[in-house]
Image (tube, rainbow, N blue to C red; front, side, top):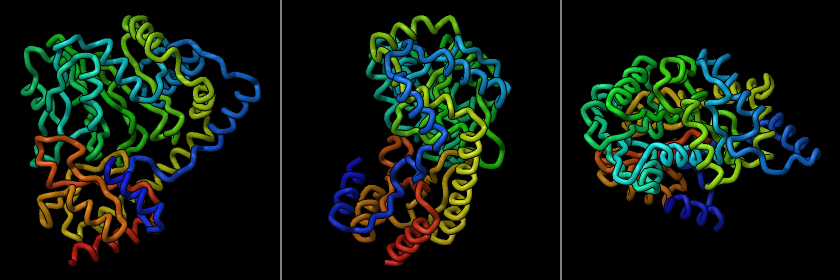
Length: 371
């Protein structure tokens, strides 16, 4: 965030900044979603909804799991939330008592530990190894599980590496957690943004997991702040009580807009954008190979590449600072994503701007490296 603030200040001063640091693509919100939201406002549908969300939206989400992913999800298992962050807060509130430990992948999304500490839990790193591209395995999860562990929070695809977990691996992890009195929580917010094999859900393989998802990434609704969770139906009344106390309800107009996200027109736009992101990914992977910046991890999903910059520096934060000041290219240092995986050796690039800007960013980066 410090680098983002500096990048914005430089841009305000007239510098041409290429933003490869922010996890938000340059696409506008799809028009079918915008139109549905406008219709809701014109009808006056702006009052509170139930805390768990519009019944029609809960059913649409459940139907999407059944039709696209062959996962037997019912509307009674779905809770609509103020962003995936709201879903994470509710899940931690439902699962974790003070002193309970939660395993978090390192490298991984930096805010997760705050959702754990917010409810008195103790975040514990689940250190991953560069030797296998920071891929999580069931054996590694089992190795890190402790006496006070109550949950493991994993992502597929993940941020920052874009790694994906196979269905069989997720099933094995979920069964291990359940067998040890805990819960596997799977962050699937990049679910639709997959390259190679098609998108999947842990819920197709097991009922022993809780899922977090969002309308922000695949559906392009970042600023609408709308997500959801899927949990066993028996848990939902307690989760709904937490939601009533913490949030009252998700944003009403955002929910009416999200109803259109599952229509054929909006899904076609989302798929077109996924293909465009895949092209950007290919461009970067091929170009970075010639700059001695190896991509670490599979980069099979999301819109990030995690790069090893140790051939040039052992201080990726300082590297990103200099790159920004001297070239106007903004990247994210590995410091954001954990402490145990030698984050000073890595940085993340987000392919969230168009190909012409990516090519310009690569040219500036190449010139910087030649120095």
